[in-house]
Amino acid sequence: MSVFNNQVVVITGGSDGIGKALVEQFLAMGAKVATCGRSQEKLHQLQAQHPGAPLFLKGVDVRNEQECEQFIADVISTWGQIDVLINNAGISMRALITETTTETLRQVMDINFWGTVYTTKAALPAILKQKGVIVGVSSIAGYRGLPGRSGYSASKFALNGWLEGIKTELLHTGTHVMWVCPGFTSSNIRNVALNKDARSQGESPMDEGAMMSSEECAGHIIHAIEKRKRTLVLTFTGKRAVFMNKFFPGLADKLTFNFFFKNGVLVK
Image (tube, rainbow, N blue to C red; front, side):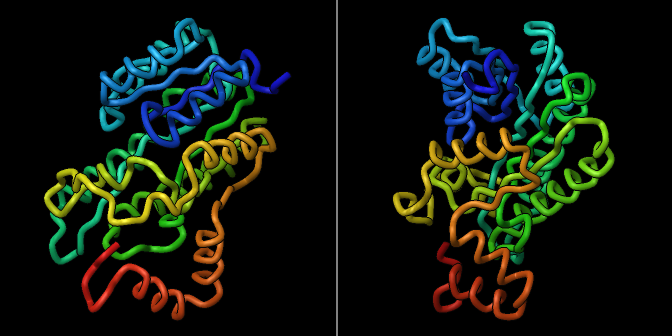
């Protein structure tokens, strides 16, 4: 029997990509799952795919503190507890700093960082009571700043630092805090990434077929939660980037530039 059987798992941004894969795998393991998203259509589709499952769905914009608080209150009202909180809702961006509007940077920070803060703060009393787990879905960009993704990198650096800070505060409470960094994973995040004008770019500049699938990524995350690992860095490229940036930062600058640029133009 799964250790997550009958546990209440809350996942933000669960209507697509890694979040949806997490929802489906936790349901298969016997968990009660609550998730939220901005697209009511995708939430309805998710509900239709799992008729009769212990699945709570709510339309939420994590940029809105009151909506996050109400979502968590509704989960507790429905199931009485929260054992695992996975802050997965996130958005990326792709624009050079010379072109990027502050609105793009603000939206990325509001969703990736403040959305996690709002939801975690609201759920914290319930998680402390259960001695549960708080997870932040971060990125390699939280260890290594990426060109064209300056705001995204900033949001993930902030996320990692905040989670590490509260992890230390809660060290002797029995509540576990961790952050996971999927690396390049096939999902919708690059298609909806914001451009310089804070609008969805509509297509991915990367080879999605060559990346780890959302389903595989979700499996690794669940295993890390079960083992209560401190952090999780996925993919060989991701692990190499973290290692190189720590020990050979100058070389990492050059390699990263060469990966994202061609003839001085941002191509990825």
